[in-house]
Length: 419
Image (cartoon, rainbow, N blue to C red; front, side):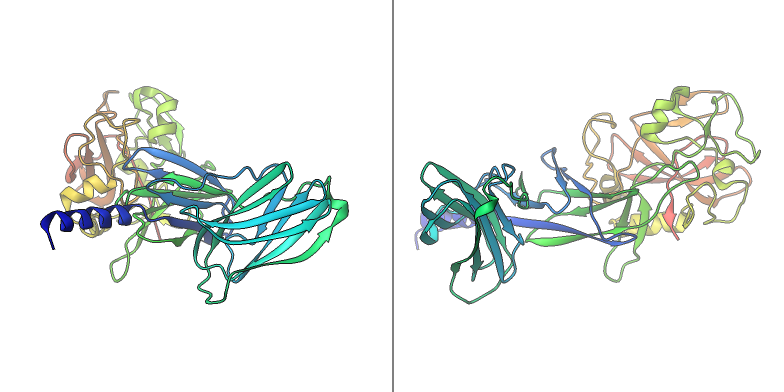
């Protein structure tokens, strides 16, 4: 085989791999099985889409079939995705011949029938469709509809579209909307995060898809004393330790100015960067170590965390870092991507863990603040001695997560880990 032929073959193979279509569906587990909305971030390309309950995410390098206009109440496919069969229902405005075509992603008609229909709503059974994405097209005199059909079947039966019923009184009654499939451009190797939200629950899953799949959000309660609800993320797999972390910085407490001491007065107190409450809403509060611990000294105490959660020990931070590959890759995997909060260059940031680390800066007892958007400092609940405790530091200019000893009177960010 000639060298040029080999090169062309390899290029075509690469293009075929990158052009694969992946269908991602979502379900819930734990505190609730329902999924309200899903926010999908392609961290590699910087694009975002939001899905409503029941929607399917369609990932494709080159987007094929466009989303059909199914909100006009004229066509419905249910269930969708289908297993063994689905019911196609549509409204016919006037008597005449109607063509129904099943079209694959390459635009090829793989099945077609024609039938004379009277005005009203008509239903057909669709079966024998192998796994993949298709378009169902309906065309009559002066009108045409289309809807996506997603099949998860491995059926070996022949494709069939069979007439089953009609409702002549349904001409003016809109059909329930069929399931939406939301397109997102995707190249194999892109890093994605899915944020599933269901009421007070919010969970992040990091993913780099190589096939169609169902993502399960493990919803857990994470609500602090003030009623703030936090997103969570599970990190770890297989035989490695599995940890569930808050994916946001704690913001519980009453704001006081940084020139005031946080004291054991029974009220949780926090500093906000530059004494501005708006910064606490984004970056969370800054806490002195003793206030965060609520004046206990035992590693792993609840402190100011929500019920069922505790302050991470130095060993738990180390386990997280080790699972993510050590100091350098871990720092990159823990940092939020993009220019919204981190100062350039936000070196190496991928957020492939879903931790979404933020650069909240620091405060001191003189009332000073520093390093917002540059560094994120996170307390561990393990002390070194009466004056110092361990922290972890994320950096804007290097992809590391560093272990430091810090004076307990500095104000730093806090995350919690599930019991």
